[in-house]
Length: 533
Image 1 (cartoon, rainbow, N blue to C red):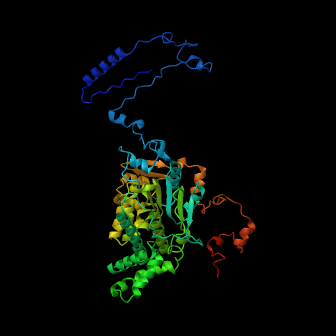
Image 2: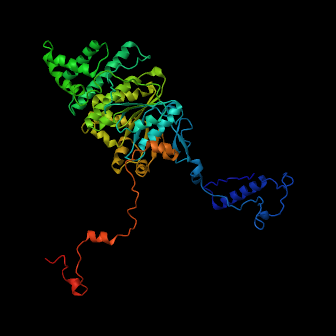
């Protein structure tokens, strides 16, 4: 075995002292050097051909083991500390599914939000939620789908409250025990956003009733304010909605629906014994809910649910692609209703099931103050329910659609997104540079790196550590075909840049008129035949 000795020379020595130091080090090296032994003493067979190279050169045979004449590497301690093997990151370990290749360490990168939360070391994180941010065609959707589908083998469930493009429905059909709930488009399925949901076993009856009532009233207020645009409900309108909801609960035996609330708002308006101010406050919310009862959203959310949530399914997707094609307002109202229903049915800690909750177009869940407050509370309770919320945004500028500039709603939206500790940052546009540094506190060098990332490569921030991961390096052909979202854009079979021989008949068809021949010198300076009137 070859022995190596590293000698560190103090930097403050004079030339004479340095020479003496090196002589002493060389003498110590010779003293410590073991005496040379013969091959026979070491139990090694004698070489058939003596010499350092054996018959390797002249007979193309084996080579005797010879010590290479390589000079020792000399460097300062600061330079030695920068040698590559000593700076390669250890990653997050091997717990959880493989999500890609860590490009800094050239090793497989595993990720699970629950494993990272349970990690008590410095690699751990304090949240199970995940923010996914990146430009179009940067690989966000494929990476999230890879994480979700690979996590199914670890016992996790995936829930998509609203699938605006129908992409997740394909994934659910391909997964074992996947369930797709289609809303609209002739489907008879209905979801009641005011469903009570399962009974929580860790709280008493009073606390449970308070949480159910708060979720129901928040859903109603979010729907009304969203339909009214930037208009905020008054205190009287709030009181009218509360009163109509309580009447509906009593009349239906705690099974309220949007139709029931709509009808009781009408009763408040027409009841002569009702305070005239409460009657006036019930008019506008009633007109908004009329859209769900008799308008373009009828038959979807106004009555009791006709489908049930399958807690044993590997993935549950609510396909709302047909409704999202109608208008932006319909898309926002639909997402509020489906998300409220999903949150009601999965708020069960006793199920002992960890779930991904994928929020496509996550900014649509934060369009009003009431929905923002509900969204913030849901993120805080995610650890309590064993849920990992995956919020997907194309750019942080999407949150500018929330409220007015410098309003309470917009500042709260940015605060909610900034508080999500785990982040996957894909390729971003140059317009996002200042926003990423200001809102997410991402270092300037990382932001510049994010502008140059190729498809499928992302900057992963897990707790206090960052990684550069290539997800598509581990993707299979089956995953690629299932996850791709740009199949409508096909590359043409022909090469437009290739040279082709034109048919002279085609040229005559394009330029049917013939010009008179004029080869004289005057022909170069005279007006052309086309210019002659």
